[in-house]
Length: 168
Ligand code: MG
Image (cartoon, rainbow, N blue to C red; front, side, top):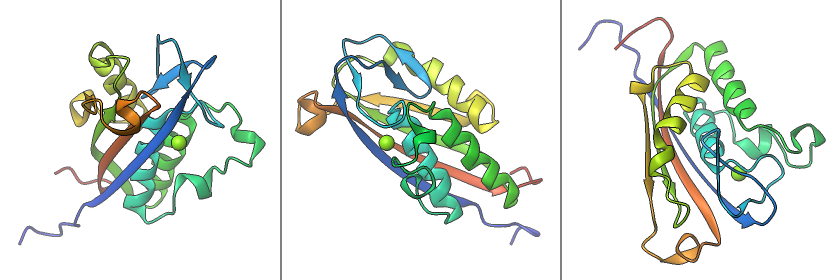
């Protein structure tokens, strides 16, 4: 057995938002040019919402809907980076830091390959880690389901938290 090793904690998050005309498209904290954005109370950034839920999940600290309810006017039009930052701060207070994060975005359109690096760097900055600790992958849904019909975008995220102060 390794000496004094605390087991890491894993969290998983999922989110989806419906497309809506007249809204900006923001994914992974990056504004992306597209003919429509996503509907939502906040900026509807499904990637950062999935990531926030992954962080909260790893902490056993509820979910984004409990912590940032869409009935709260404070979150109207909110930059979803706020949710990620608060979840990271909660982790820090509980003695955890982010080890790495892995994100998959499901979108039929727009093509996201040109934006993956910017999302990766933005997410890394929000998590307080280097870009090498963050992965952003983009896929279509092969024209199947709500993503395939371009009704919306979905995102999945996994994070690993390590005990603060220890480097694996
Ligand atoms: Mg959401």
